[in-house]
Length: 190
Figure: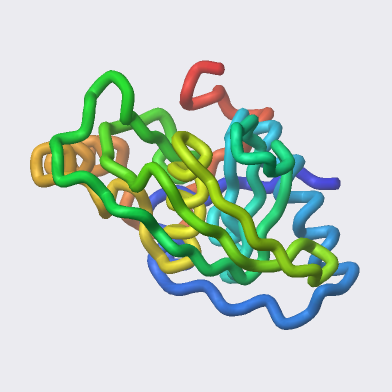
């Protein structure tokens, strides 16, 4: 297994729809193993393939949950059915989200409290499960990556302005920027 660099806001693969996975083969298994290794080294709870520069529709996750879903897994070619998202202002204490591709920055964001996830495991076997609470948030966050969206693209006007300012101050928004989990300092201080 190999730890791979994580792409940062501005890398083109992060901002376009990823392609469907066509082959459930040894290359896919190696990619998934590398993604888990990278996610672990980055202290992440999820990692989508575009975050390591691979424009394919899959993500890994590591999150305890109350939904009878294994705490560690992969979803290939997922579809998501999303519950209602409240129109209320996000809670700055309880609804803060971060992203490995927007390292070290987090903002409050409303997400649905329930989603249904369908897709495939690394061997091509069908998956179909419901996720609630923070696990649902994780599923929505990772799925967004596959459609070329980052969580900062979903922020309300107040937080979007702050996110743009932070990105500009850090020099993000251009291709070629990455950080290396396990080598570079942990941007979230784990």
